[in-house]
Image (tube, rainbow, N blue to C red):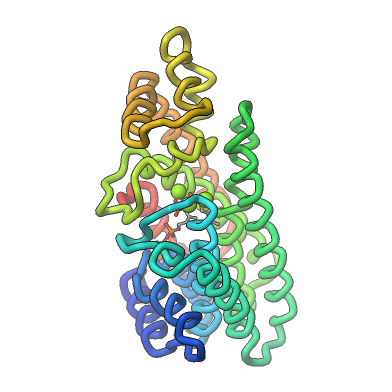
Length: 324
Ligand code: IPE
Ligand code: IPE
Ligand code: MG
Ligand code: MG
Ligand code: MG
């Protein structure tokens, strides 16, 4: 079985050897720029891991894995416009380095290229995979719309938050694993279980992303720390704080969430301090661990020799303690 490091090498080599060519350069350069900045390549690695787990050779579905990474990068470029994010993977975001219209089009192109690459050769399971991919892509849009809607909605529940992150983030991890599994000829019930596994670790993954946005190290996360606080994102941390805060903490929180010009640095450090006082980080972490645990229970139901599951279980264990 092949581990994350080796699969990462495979996918990175594939990306390096597959430049997206075309004119005008202003459209294609941002695509190659964002792809060249790296990242964890989590989703394509999940495609390859599930494929091998169910008996396939990961080297035979690099195109399909790359397609999913292209889709992911499309969502990042558009997400950074929506979130007004200046930094991604420690470099200027596409809409800052070029401009918003270019970032919209570069994102659109990556979405098209993702479809092209996923369907570039005939396969008896292609219809099933394309349906899954299209449904997932629509769900990501739904999740992103909830995410933005919640920025200005005062009351958001933990349940609504979990539904939102399931859509914007978790379904793509499920889709990546299920794609690898389907192409390897997994039975429907196994493919469904690996999808559910991916969705559960995906929810844990986004909970961690939200924690790192507040408490992570700027160089390690490669993004502007506190971006979620500045945008009034209804993260698990903020929802818990709004439920727990009393007296001056609640007044202060409402002040920072309210209208008017706030100094960005002051807002981030004030809200972070409130999170610390209310100890909401440990609540969010507990929720994250609970989702990883539920994922493990789904994995236990997959009837395969334990050694086949090792790379994926090791990767999930790393995600639980990641710092980037
Ligand atoms: C960022 O995804 C967007 C989320 C869904 C949290 P990653 O954290 O996987 O980003 P890269 O690809 O490693 O840069
Ligand atoms: C992003 O969520 C989800 C998608 C890109 C679909 P975030 O907005 O939290 O991702 P980051 O933190 O910018 O990577
Ligand atoms: Mg976002
Ligand atoms: Mg964002
Ligand atoms: Mg984030």
